[in-house]
Length: 371
Image (tube, helix red, strand yellow):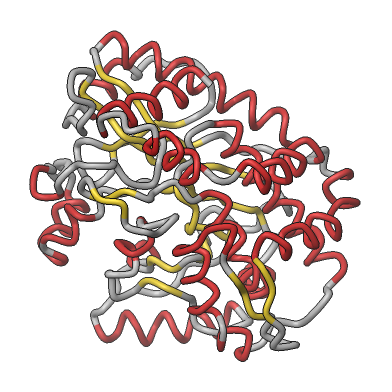
């Protein structure tokens, strides 16, 4: 299969996808009710999209094409309100969060579509363990070459988004010690991690042809990279964020990315290089394990700094671009979260009060459904 042509998009347009947890309102475990919720939402108003995910206890929502923080936030709030009403009608709850705190993978059921069955047959138990929940952000770019340049330029900032969005400290009833344990599940897949260092769409096509000729991949969907090009949309897709516990946080993360992309495209503060990836896995681990308290190494200077400090410096550098994009409120919310902590920190604070684990999940669901 040949790589499709890259569809040009208006630069810096946004699309947000959120994978969400479907919860039983009695024990707040995951419940396989995706079909029921999809039927209830079939006549929803708005330009957003809703569809199933790999297991029946999950659902994915996708926004329309957006250009600024306030309209994106408002659409996500409307989406949340309609989904919450539909969920109450079928007696379930909905929550964000990168992992469910105590579900067991063996209890999950694969959603009955051809692709999900194929993934289950190929990856075995990993498919059910993929019942984790992420936020994906698409950013429009005008060409495949632009997409690949921006993808690699953003590699230095991947830890920012992991740490800011982290909301998965608990797995199967245990505190993992990680802020984002979700990404450990993603990393189990053989085609995850970073994209190969290719800077032209022609060169990427050659790589894609080699991969398809081996039979290892059939389409771009088979790549689970942290950032990947999406030629059919004319975007790059950032995939490292846990689903936040609120839609306002999801909108803010998307517009922080948008402002950062404008800064990189217009100021070109550096040229991406293969050596940028020498510290990529270390920086990524630090963000997953320690969140905003992690450390990152600058690939050029080799200097180590606190991730929180690196985000503060970045916010200052991109502020003029955020102003032009009407994203200052989004960046201010990001700045506030550096003091308040991420959602994983919020969950641990709640847990330190010694409520039952189900009460923690119930509180997270209330946070998402009511704002």
